[in-house]
Image (cartoon, rainbow, N blue to C red):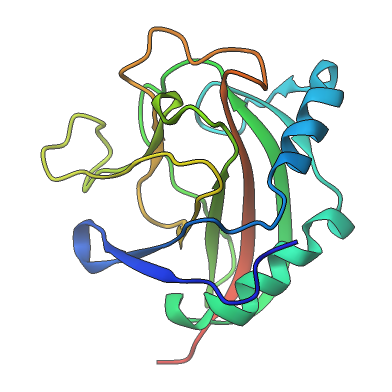
Length: 192
């Protein structure tokens, strides 16, 4: 599913954090777009996402290759030592966000990692923005542009949001909208 020898680029985020970017991550990214197209009628609004989105939850077996890839190539770079749980979705952003979000965990010594894999061929559908504070118009914000088959992985404790402000409406169609595969890994932090 994933190409075995990724070229991983580090992107500095506000506050000293790092996001990791892997271009051309999947061997056959069109399979995920086909899945979204075939199941477009099952995309449902997710009020817990923190931004306007329609999603299809993905079962564990479909997420297993991403979890293995994350553990082999990116987990230690982000300061985590073990994956405790995984959630994932095919997500279609339906409107620009009004504020950034953070993934959260409830247990001490744990953290959440977010992975976003861009599946739209049109980069104008929007990438990711990482503001330094909980405001999208932050002058210090770092933007990672969308690119087909680009994987971005980062500590979910950082403010982040879809960067779709330049479009009037992102689009409700998996063929033309901001389609991504999103995953959240709950992890045990490495002892410091």
